[in-house]
Image 1 (tube, helix red, strand yellow):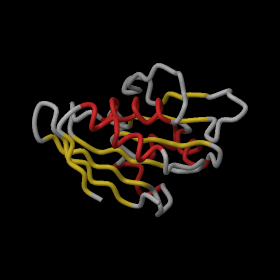
Image 2: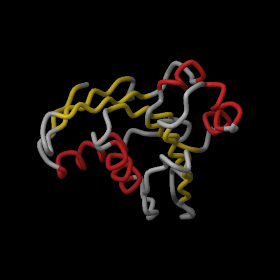
Image 3: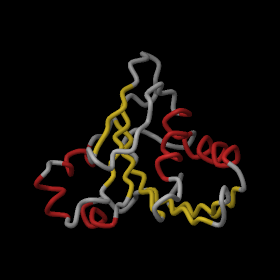
Image 4: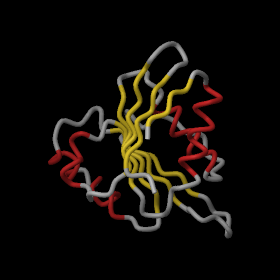
Length: 145
């Protein structure tokens, strides 16, 4: 699926559509150049999945976890990773981050996922963000149910 957005509001609507199709155990890979809006897109996903957490980039801490304690919540945990500063899959394993990939009750969202791809299952959801202008983006979405 390819979707072009021309505003933040349209990007929010796309995030809502994608969020409505996510299930516990899903892994979402987000790719795009610096400043493409990956973390902003994650913020929209987290919001539409019913989490009240403030989403911050995990670039310096590598991983953040958001928890929804609402008893009726369909998705209770979102893991948000940013692998930009890592240089190898071995680093991922040494830091114990690969354990996050196997959490069946959580959604895992990974920014800059290239070093992790060989460690992930084949059915991950891939979203590539292409910058077209100041607020214009093109989203390429693969493997979304």
